Structures are given as C-alpha cells and as structure tokens.
Amino acid sequence: MMSPLEELLPSTQRALLHRIAAAQAEGRAPSLVAAVQRDGQMVWTGSRTCVDGHGPDADTQYRIGSITKTFTAVLVLRLRDEGLLDLGDPLEKYLPGTGVAGEVTVAQLLSHTAGLAAETPAPWWERTPGTSRPELADVLGEQARMHPAGRVHHYSNPGYTLLGRLVEVVRGESWAQVLRREVLEPLGMRRTSAQPVAPHAGGWAVHPWADVMLPEPAVDLGLMAPAGQLWSTTADLCRFAAFLAAGDAKVLSAESVREMRTSAAPAGPGEVAGGYGLGLQIVESGGRTLVGHTGSLPGFVAGLWVSVEDGVAAVALVNATSGVSAPAVAADLIRIVVEAEPRVPEPWRPLPEVDQELLKLTGPWFWGTSSYALFLAADRGLELQPLRGNGRGSRFAARPDGTWTGLDGYYLGETLRVVRREDGSVSHLDLGSFVFTREPYEPGDAVPGGVDEGGWRGL
Image 1 (spheres, rainbow, N blue to C red):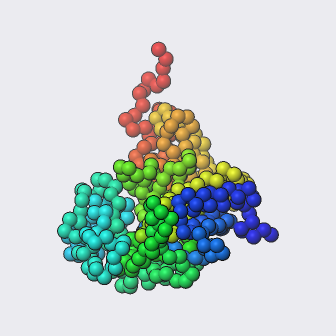
Image 2 (cartoon, rainbow, N blue to C red):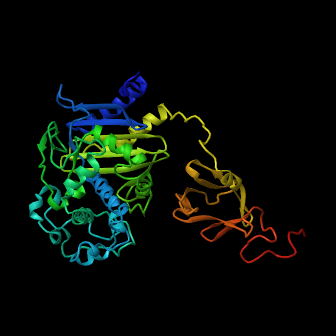
Image 3 (tube, rainbow, N blue to C red):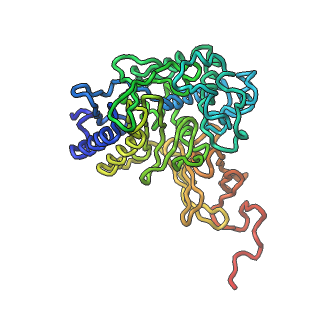
C-alpha cells in the first residue's frame, strides 16, 4: 500500500514544490513550509529555507497568528451546543461591567459584526507583552465601539479577547487549558501550543531594500492570546483542516462546523470577495469557495484554506513579517492539486434502508406554478430542488418530531412539515408557510387564497 505522501502524482508534487520554492525565493523568506491534505489525510509536505540542510518539516512549529481565532470560535460553539450560552445573548450576561462592549451579542463577536475597534489602544499589542494590558479595560480602551452593532463587518482583535474571556468565565479555567483539553488533545494536535516548543522557527523581519534580517520579538500576548497566540505545525493544521471539513463528534458536530462555515457577514471594503462565518474566513478563489483563516504576527505569516467540495486543504507557514503571502500560497496549492488531479467521484450506492412513506413523498411538487422535485436522501433527509429556472432549493435534515430543518440556501433553519388530511393522506407540504401541492392550483387543494372556481382557461 502506498504511504500518504506518495498518493499525489510526481508531476503534481513537482508543481507544488515549484510554487513554494518561487514564493520563498521571490519573497525573500528565511523559510517556508507547506502541506496539502486530501480527504482527511496529509498527502504532501515540502519546505524551502535559506540555511542549507536545515529545512523545516511538518512538525516544526511556526506562529499562526489569527488562525488562533478559529480555535477560540470552536470553544464558544461547544458552549452553545452544551446549552451553556446562546449566540444571541449579550456579552454583558456573562461579562458584566464591559460597558458598550457588553451590549453586543456573542454571535456578533464571532462574526466581527459587533462594531468594536480593530485594535487595542497603543502600544501595538502584537509587539508588546500582554502584561502591559492586564485588564479587559486596557484591551478595549475608551472608544471600544466604532460602528453600530450588527451593521457592518469590522474585523476586531479585541472582540476575540472578549470571547476568550467568556470561555474562561463559563468553564472556570484558563483559555489555554480549555483549548488543550477540549480541542487539541481530541484532534491529536500535540504540536500546537500557546508557547513555542522546540523545534520551532524564529521570527524575522527582512529589510525591504537589502538582503539582511532582524529578529522579531515573540511576546506572550496575555489577554489577547485568544486572538493570535498559538504556535502550530503544518501536520497539526492539516488535522484541524480535516475537522473544519467534516466535524468531529469529540469536538464539534458536523452541523455546528457547517454553521461556522456559513457566511454571517459580507466581506468588508477592500477585503477579498467572500465573507466571514463564525470564526472562519470565506473567500472565492479560482472559481471555488475556500474556508479557513489567515494569520500574521511580527515575524510570521500563515494561511490555512479548505475546499470542502474538492476535499482538499492546504497550509503554508512563513517566518517573515512580510514578503510572502502565505494565504495566497495555500490557495495556489489547492488549485494545483484540484486541477491536476480532480476528485474521483464516489461510487453510487443505494440507501441502506428505505421508509416507504417517505418514498411516496418524492417526485414533483408545485409552489404556485413553479415546479420542484423532492428527493429522498440518507438518514431520512430530504432535498427540494427547482425543476426549471433559478428557484430556491435546500437540503433538509430529519428531526425527531417528524419535521425537517433546512440546512442551506434560502430555507436555512426553516421547518418543512407534511400536512395530512383527516384520513391520513398527504394534503401538502408546508415550508415556512409556503404551500407545496402535487398539482399547480388544483381545485380543492390547500392553496392560500383559494383557487378560482372557473379553473384553468384559454383566451
């Protein structure tokens, strides 16, 4: 059996190596390490360095900056799923005394729509010890909110400090302890930590006009840690990418991870087309949707992207303050793999079991005169799709009470139910008050407003 690192074609591996070699050389980076994951397994890793014989490998730590925010978001979603908080709750409910910041909701903090300031008051928090900001008030400053809550997407580092503190208050432990126990250990991410653990890269600044370098400080961010503290490796981040694509019952369900990947705010001015979910960036690149996060701190740039549809993810880590766009490199690695080796479709297989009553519901339905088809999916799920035109389609998950909940599209979160007549026969489908009947405006059907008694007619 081939090992995971031998699964990509040699020509694909050469193209991947060429991309990172060009990035390291043209960007004048001290080192660059990258990896590609396909269908949950790391299938390629490579690196380039300015020091012969000392190339980093998949277990060498780099600082990952704001990719840390995605981990913090996972912890908050876990609290929600346990019923310990509601995303619609104001922060004040858990962190009293936070002033105007306490008026925003947990969901708004997760999606950067709380209107909070992008940065802390001076001095620049990324290059100064967290001890200089010992209290939340030092992080928020006098003008904590810059925009009306819920109106615009405005990226906020202090917002994720508040979420980290929220985790600590609800759990009664430090953010780092909770993260280790609830996310890192269950996912097998043993080389991800709040402090660097050898072997790890040092952070450097490269002079813009000369080929010389200057070491960057690697400070403990203190309260700002949930916004950017973590160190990790390409191997560990590939494990995290697999989780972001499919979820893991030990950490967060596939449904909750899908919620994280769903856009909660449009991209802001000057940002890459896409949007922001709950702790995840969403970008459109080369005709495909990528989810993940970018990260940077003095001395380091990082990028992690997942193409869920293609089953491919990529990570790129650089130990330079600027010069190489690690997120762009990661996106290119995905493109190279997908274009060179398109995903092989899974073989068709019949459902393991069939509910005959549900099977009777499949086929054509009409919303007014618009035709739709209802399909039966696995686990008693349903899918409603327009037969013509650009109607609204969605997938639906079965619920214990005999209804279905929309998983995507216009009907996300809406309830689909089967309405029966007194004799038990099916009358119609009710989808968020929309009525779907077997025939278009059939007399006697439960059509809102009734049907003209004259019926269908010509000129």
